[in-house]
Image: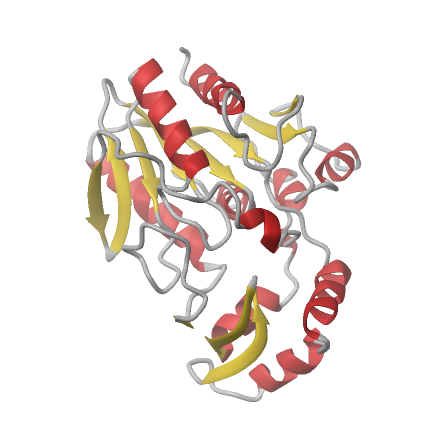
Length: 285
């Protein structure tokens, strides 16, 4: 994933306390913003982030306050499901990128159980790629539309070069070491996602670093049939290749691309209002 650690450290602090309630299901945690009606929104965070990071809490609050839409903002479990801050790089990492679509499905099931029969899904950054994986497979019938905010792209050669540049070690050699271990065996690695000198299970390392087409949002979008808006910021340097990648991808008529002039990767301040508007449009508001 093309994710800049320096940029990821910005705009990830928790927003002030909102009128949300923490809910749990199957060992997972989310913030639930109650609202009117049976149309609701799921909003998913990005890389090693959390349900109360600024962009997620802001979008959820705008949808809830301005449109009275119920919102569910889950944490991906990431070996610390109840967290209210970024994943601690010092923890032992035994989570997998491929956990995300399953956990999204779990929250969609929970939302259905609460009586929501029309669900719009939205996600930021790596969460956008993970959500697009879910949408490209077999999304639940109640999922009617999606908004992907600065979703991640993927290129295996770029990923390998980035690992070598960041650590001085070839990714292939670390993968070879991981492949020689049992999946639940722990190993110390020079880097895991954006955590330096991390302790990680061999299975988790292999899952995150084995090249897969589903890491890449533009690739997934070719198999997504739901109405989908991809939102880009004109000043986004984290997924800087996204505009060119989308332009080179044969997208269906169901996919609309919107660029917000002046927005960076985190869509601070009034730029979040534009994202909320795109989501509300899907809800017919």
